[in-house]
Image (cartoon, rainbow, N blue to C red; front, side, top):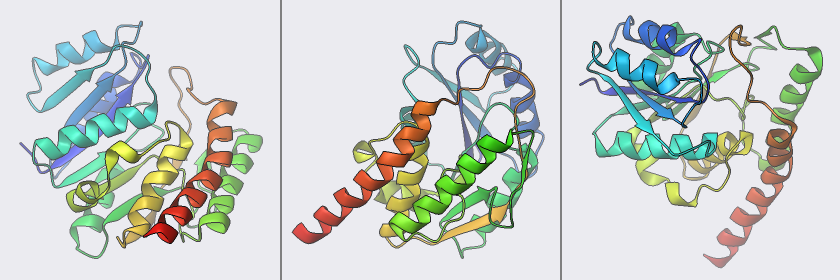
Length: 242
């Protein structure tokens, strides 16, 4: 077993899952993979089960339905802590995150100067490929908005390509993380920052999926928009009571 675990949530990812898993397992140092599978009707789980026969460090948790990105990662985080992993990664299944960049995230965390490392689309400008301009602008200014409201000095607060050290996930009360979409990513980073952990961004190139169907929706952005305000107010009230 490796000390590094990559969590990959899946829903209808039959076109991508085998390739992404094999790419992760080709890396040095080695990474284990945990797939959180939400009962995909396209047979994604069957592909993973077949791969497990050949790849003993590939694990899967099958859930009863599409329960949300945030709950998928929370499930994965708890599993990772129970199984003793030291570095825990979030990554999409669709190659929008380059698996080769996992080694860069790990190096930034393992160097001892960072507790949360974010693969950032915006820390050195705008590094997004194949997105329509409307979506780039929405995502970019969403992160600007998060910085303004929260005071957190992160350029890409909605990023889903992240490395957490074990210590961060042990300190965060995972059962109190409320959001499921983009706001989940913001809430995790904001909570870690409020707890005094060191956040670092490293630049990546984000490439939109070429196979499969995007899970993005307007509701996810609405959750991020209003979620940041409610999250900030909730933390402020908690601080006043303490």
